Amino acid sequence: MLENSYVMVAIILIINIVYVSFFTIRMILTLKGQRYLAAGLSTIEVVIYVVGLGLVLENLNEIQNLIAYAVGYGIGVIVGMKIEEKLALGYITINVITKEYDVDLPKALRALGYGVTDWAAHGLEGDRMAMQILTPRKYELKLYEKIKELDPKAFIIAYEPKSIHGGFWVKSVRKGKLFS
Image (cartoon, rainbow, N blue to C red; front, side, top):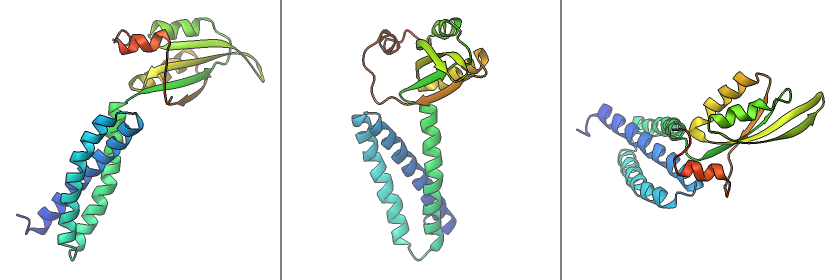
């Protein structure tokens, strides 16, 4: 079966897509502090890597194998990133500055289950409201849509917090009480 060059190219391509996808997910798990899951995944990852690289090195005179390895690597990066987007691990913090001061906006977001801290702010053109909103990453896009619906001219900045400690909202999320 491995004598057929098309089959060999397909196998190398698939192996590298899987390997690099695992690599990408492992790196993300490592950054998120999921050390045991990352270590388990890396065990599978290295086996896949050695098999794929072995196939290329055994047949180094076949340029199509090297090309398949390189193309598989590139596709694997994209696939790994797509998988990570779907998993959406962790939380995101979104800072919002509204066009006008609106006391009902934080209430509306809290009613949807988002953790919102708000305060009065002053911009170049007058009074504003500043809000800091914490949400699981899987709800990030829904939150952007809701903010834009409630205040289309809101200024939005998002970042990923490295660690979170305390607060009622985090406890509620961990208990599964929000976003049911």
